[in-house]
Length: 286
Length: 274
Image 1 (tube, chains in turn brown, green):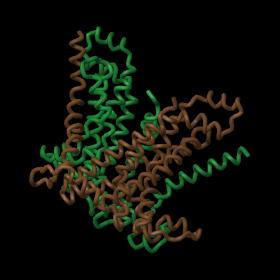
Image 2 (cartoon, rainbow over the protein chains, first blue to last red; image 1 turned 120 degrees about the vertical axis):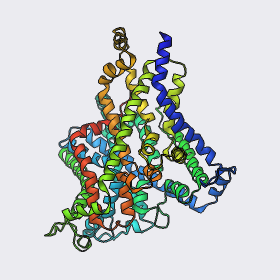
Image 3 (cartoon, chains in turn blue, green; image 1 turned 60 degrees about the vertical axis):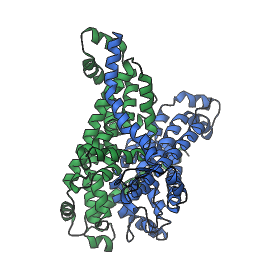
Image 4 (cartoon, rainbow over the protein chains, first blue to last red; image 1 turned 180 degrees about the vertical axis):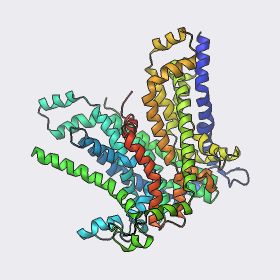
C-alpha cells in the first residue's frame, strides 16, 4: 500500500518535475555558463571567464541602463504603493458606489500592456494631447513627454501607475478586510485616534502583505519592458533604455549571447539582494 | 465635519476614476476622426462625418488583426489549460501523497518563483531553437506550460482536502485519478477559475517572449502585432491605431464587465493567507 502511494504520488508530480528541470533549472544554470562565454550563435560558445562582466562594468551604456532601471523602479513604486494603500483604505468602509469605484480602478489591470501603451501614445501626443487639454486652461506649461529625455521616464512611470495601481489596491484591500474589527474597537476604547490606529494596528498587521507587494512590484518593475519598448523604444538618447531592453538588444540585435546573459545574471543577483533586504525590513515583528 | 470628510473621499475616488476613464474616452474619440482632424480639431469635437467604420476597416488592410487575435487566443488558452491540468496533478501529488524527495521537489519548484524571466529567456530561446520550434505554437507555449505559482496555489488548496473523503472514495474502489478529478477537483472550482484568469491575462499580455521566438507575421500574437504596428510605420496614424486598440480591448472589457467579481477575487486571493 505504501509502495502504491509513493509510486502514484511520484507519477502525479513527475510531469511537472521534468518540466521544471528542463525549462527552469537547466536554463537557469545555463545562463551562468553562457555569461562566461563569447557566443554569437554561429560558432560554438567559447569560454572567456569573467571578461563579459569586466567589460560591462566599464561600459557606459550598461551603467546608464542600470541607472535608468533604478529610476524607473523607485519612481514607480514610491508613489504607487502608498497610493494603492490609500485607495484600499478609502474603499475599506461602507461607502456609496464602492463597487463601481473598485471596478473602475481595477479595470486597467486587465488591459494588455501593449494596448495601454497605444492609448497613452495619443494621450501624450505632441499637439492636442489629453494632457495639454487638461492643463492648458490652468496655464501649465507644455511638456513634450515622450520626445524629451527628461520627461520620457516620468511619462512611462505615469503609465505604470495608471496600469498597476488597481492591482495592488485590490491586494491591500483583501488584507485590510482580513483585519478583525475588534482590534480597532479595543484601540478606540483605549482612546486611540485615527492616526494612532493606522500607525499601531493597520500598518503592523499589513506587514506580511506589504512584504509580498514590495517584492512582487519590485521584481516586475525591475523587468519592465513593454511600455519602454512600445512608447519610447528606449529613447530619447537612451533615457528609458531599461536593462531588459539592453539584454534584448545584446542578444537579438548584436547576437552577443554571452554579454546579454551576463547582464541578466547581474539583474538576478541584484534582485535577490534587494528581496533579502525587503525580507529583513518587513519581516513580522517578533 | 463628518459629511465634509465623506464628500472629500468621494471627490478623491471620483478623480482617480476619471483619471482611469479619460484616456479610454480619448481613444474612442480618436476613432471617430480622420488623421488630419486629430491634429487640427480639438479632441472633443465630433465630426459631421464619423470615420469610425473607415478607421476600423483600415486596421484590417494594415495588419492581419484576426490572425493575431486567434494566435493570442490559441497561445493563452493552451498555456492556461496546461497549467490547470498539470498544476492540479502535481499539487494533489504534493499535498496528499508521501514519497521520497517530495519536500525537496516542492521546495525547488517554489524556489524557481524567485528566478526572473529575463534570466532564463536566452537559454529558453536556445532550447526552442535547438528543438526547431522557432515560429511555432509549440515554441510560444511549451516553455510556459506549467507555473510554479499554479502548483503552489493548488498544493496549498489541496492540503485542506478531507483525507476521510479521499480514503472512503478509494475504499469504494475509485482509482486515484478518478478520486482526484471526480471527487476532489469539483470542490476546488473557484480556485481553479482564479488561477485560469490570472494565467490567461498574463499570457494574453505577454510581449517579450513572442517577440523573441517568432519571426513571421502569421505567428505574431495580438500584443506583438500591435507593438510592431505602432513601432513600424503607423505610430502616428492615431485614428487607425486607436481603432485597433479599441478592437483589442472590447472583448476584454465585455468579459470583465460580466466576470468582474472573479477577476478581482483572483488577484485578491494573493492577500488571503492559507
